[in-house]
Image 1 (cartoon, helix red, strand yellow):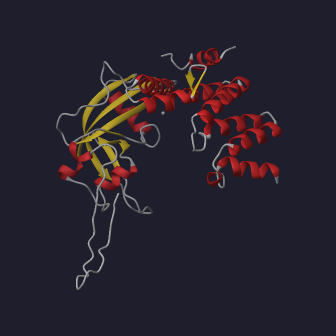
Image 2 (tube, rainbow, N blue to C red):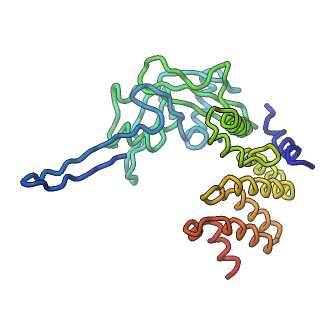
Image 3 (cartoon, rainbow, N blue to C red):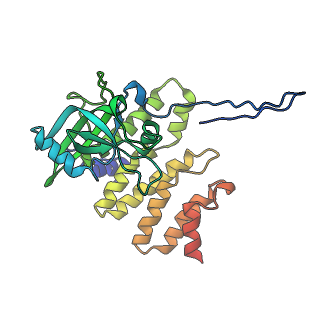
Length: 304
């Protein structure tokens, strides 16, 4: 069976309906004042501009309240809705970093990611007025006996350009998110290969094995492992290892595929093969990158 056949089999089920820079001044004559330069770099969504941010906790701590909120909105089987929301600072007892919850009609439906909570509420104090005003776009899907919910939050009450709509629905279930991730990876690779940057195209071309880029094997390998098809997963791992080695240039190859192959060999009781695949990665890894790597740590345990 060819590489593309493995890819089709492994993905078939998933496509059906998760700075500051400072410098000090030097003394010049009688001048001894230190000069400090500060540069702020925006990373991720700009909260102050009303750009939406994906919430955390909708499938864990806030899962029950999210499910009840969908029922309250008349959407017991899922769907999506927009709503005004309120940011609520969670008590600081026992924690150093601020935590900011997102409430809709008094129910906690999620949280700001940690880095954003620190920007929104650096002093970890109660939020009120404009600082607490927000809005959400929630998406839910019926899964088994319950519901899985994800959502985005934005500051203020001005119109928001949400990332998803009826025409472009959010990937809510685990299966949908896996399919979305695979599609995103395939799109990135296609754009690189067909783009105007010949150097970038060549970099991605080196990672191809039988016409498939090694980055595209991640979800298929995971799926085959979930199904207990370890032999097929192992074959994909070695194909991906080949692509990662060809793509490494002066760097170490992407280690994930080697780690997965080693895990599969371990499950199958194949100690010699596990040692061999770990050594294979280390042999092509720059010497200064070997110590402390997961491959080296595992190999040391095996050969002691």
